[in-house]
Length: 420
Image (cartoon, rainbow, N blue to C red; front, side, top):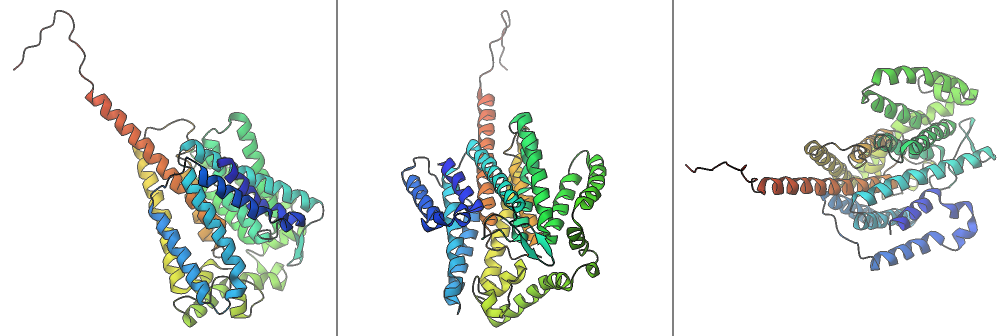
């Protein structure tokens, strides 16, 4: 069952049916998911993991459905709503079939492996001449059409990076695993820079600084980072150098690059305006363009939530974030009660998820990422990780109780016990 889920991860991320249309004509993804659900039905290892975050996701799902039904542009947003509920189905399969450390490690490693294949496939296509020309420069895109936009593609890379140090610290696969992690990191940075996505670059820098400052050899890593960053910048084509320089100096780029940056702020303000028009349910999920007459999407998570889902979205999305916070707090509290273990990936996964969620919220200032699969998949990883940590804590408590109940050993020969 776990391998079937990893296979669907590959289909969902790399989306080969969008690369080879004949697979799309066969509805390959849908057939695969139906087969996976059929196997789930007869799978004997299903079990429900109680967690308050399930209710938060259920609330968000109800809000999305309600806002969609009430939207005047219901037909326009149907594909987005259907795709999001498919992600919700995968989340349900994940949290009901993965409930031990071995399974969780397999899913996390499988996710990073799938992302590596996705990046390698996209880079191969880029070197073959597949890219988009936008903002006056040639920009790398993902091999798929759903999440292949340069900004979305770059964001996907950033959200995967926190799992690399978790795998490294866990000693996953020994020396060979470390080489694979280094290779993935290099591939990820290269692809991200070639996208020309300024928001993704800021996310990469923020992620790097958080990881460096949390390392015990932080000063050495700061020096290495300060030396490597200028070299990487100089190695870029002049067009990409100018693109990234507009982050601090908008005058060096074309006018549309400056307008694009200002559009993120405008997306937030328009979201507030749409919220005022429809305070309860907004204009509906995926209805930003027809509702505003804009040629582009919100490019701002917070404007997207307010404008498309109204108060229902604000409250339920807040519940999802609170669920992440509570589970992270509980995982940290349990970890403090456990004896440290060498090469322990389980205790590293919550930190990786926490950093990824922080990056999702940060990059939400530059992109409309509300309906990304990442919110649900990473939430599933965190719920399973908390469950496994609770099991380990319970086992430790039982072992300690058994040891305390063991009868005292016999007295040495010649010794006499006197009561009183």
